[in-house]
Image (cartoon, rainbow, N blue to C red; front, side):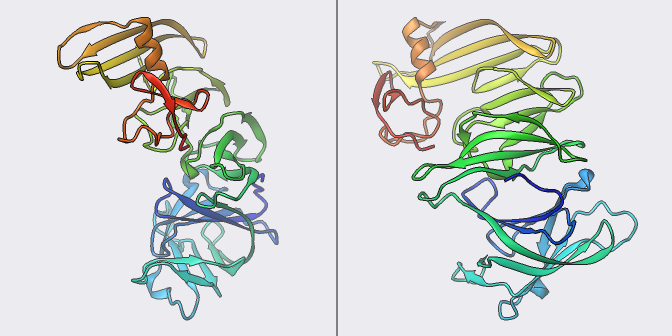
Length: 366
């Protein structure tokens, strides 16, 4: 689904946190030019977001529930913008939704899920200082918990953006599989023109936080970092980096769970730490390091090295070829005691994963 800036698009995100498991409902209104998006958290009393695509300086605006307006029996709610950059003492934007059908999910009355396939109400447009009627139909639905669902090429607007560019995550899901980040689409803010597609990623789903912006080559321009795995699922940042060169994003192909960028010469150092136990049950660390030089908006691999350190015997030496290869295959975090339940950061090889120096039958959680 391509985001159409001529439509009003409401996305209701029903999750404990936007980085956690999440159900997203999209509602559209084709009746007039209302360029906003609305994201709801699962708890009606939690923080939500209004997205005004005409205002790049404040694309995302946090919304909070007007507690005095919330009455389940009356089935109407009002949300106000809480962090407006308004300096003219104009009235702030707000959304009022009527005739809402609720499903109470909290025994203490704290959470209410909206069940509507249609939403009606009014939106006070802070930009134009006008009250506008809204009528929305459900467009698409994403639910991480529904393993049987399937969809193809749904685009989800991302939280981070540049002054003249916004990003969408292209999502795909096959039946009985998890949601995958297939690509990132990059659009011009003013015209909604598609500038670039980054495809064939096959990364984990991170809702509205699949991308981050960071100046990795220290030229004063923000570059693109894409999350490879679920947030906090594995050690290291694990980003896929792209350099921004005149709004064209160039793949860096940098290797490493953690990558450090040097502002002096713009070089980069990627590394992977592999913790394990040896035959004597000593704690050991194998560390692989890759050094990159920077030339003309590209990183070139200069050298690779591998060191082995025994925490108990204090032995410190270069790795053997076997230790080096083991670390390349080894999972990069140890968050589970059961080797048969493998985290989503593992490399699958012939239905097996690498664990303590050998391949064993394993399950990919991702």
